[in-house]
Length: 411
Ligand code: GAL
Image (tube, rainbow, N blue to C red; front, top):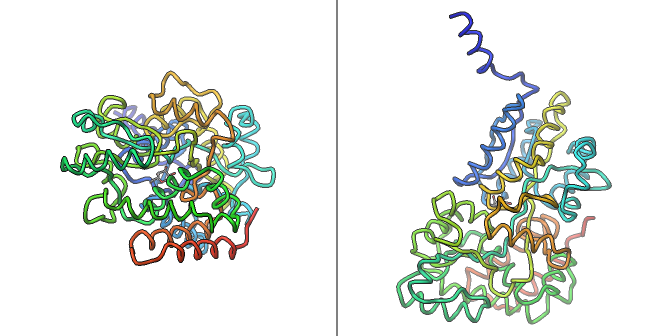
C-alpha cells in the first residue's frame, strides 16, 4: 500500500514552479487544440508542465492585446505565440529571451528553412522557436460536391465565377466566408497576389507609394466586393472553423483559407483527396503566401529559463515537427522533413516553399509582411470597403496609400 502510494505520488506530483510554463496562444478550434495538447504532452514527458492560457481570437489580435496588458501589469506568461514582425518589435524592447544557445546546440542554422530562420532572428540573435509554416493561399473544396455536379476546380477567378454560378443554381453556397475582418482580408490578400506578385510586394512588403495607385489594386478590391454574391446571405461574422464545417457537410463547396483549415477538416474525419482537396487560391499557383507559427520566451522569471529552453528545443525535434504539423495542417520548418509522413497537400506546400525566395510571399494579415500597426490599419480599411458598397474604390485606394506612407517603417 505504502509503495503504491509512493508510486502514485511520484507521478501525480505537481511540478515545481520553475518547471511549469504558462503559454499564451490563440489556438482554439478542435485541431488547433489537439496540436497544442500534443506539444504540451511531449513537454510533460520532459518533466516540464504546460499551463495553458488560451485567448480565442482567430488570427491573434485579442491575444496580442491581452499579452500587452499582462506585460504592463507585470503578470506576463513565460511563453507566448508571437508571430512574424511582432517578434522583432518585442525583441527590440528587450522583452524576449534570446535562444542563441539552444539554436547553436541544436544546429538550427543547418536544420531550418532559410526563410524560417530569418523570421525568428533579430539583430543577429534568435528570439523564437518555430513550429510550422502555413500556406495562406489555399482553396479547399468539397470533392464530392464538385464531382457530383461535374465541375472543375477553378484555377483563375474567371473560372471561379463560372463554377460558382453553377453551384449557386444547384443550391450550394459557392464560397464559405465569414465577414470577420481578418478573414475578409485573408481572402483579399490572395486576390492581390493574383493580380501580380510585384503588386503584392510593392503594397505590403515595400509599401511603395506608386503601388497604391496601381489599377490592379482597384481590381482586387472590386473583386473582393463582387465575390460577396457567392458567399451566401447574410454573410455572418463567424469563426473560421464554422466555414470549414459548411464545406465538410457540403452546404458550401469551397473556401479560401490558410491550411489550418486542412487540420480541421481532417479532425472532422475527412480525408485529403477523397472527401476534400486543396489547390492554390485562384491565380496564385506559383506562390506560397505563408506565415510561420512561433513561440517566444518572455524574460520575466530567470528561474524558468531552463524549462523555456527545453520547450524551444522540443519544438524543433523531428518527432514533434512531424506529428504537430500533421495535426495542425502546416508543414515542418525543416530543410529535411519526413516527406513520406506528409499528405499530398503538405508535400506540395513544402516543395513550393522550399523552391526558394521567388515563390515565398509573406502574409500581410498574419503579420509576416509589415509592421503590426500598418497591418491593423489596412485590415480595417479593407473590411470597411467589403461591408459598405457605397464607398468608392478610389477612396479606399487613397486611404490605404495614406496608411502606407504615414507609419514609420521599422527594421
Ligand atoms: C493564424 C495562425 C494559425 C491559425 C490561424 C487561425 O494566425 O498562424 O496557426 O491558428 O491563425 O486561428
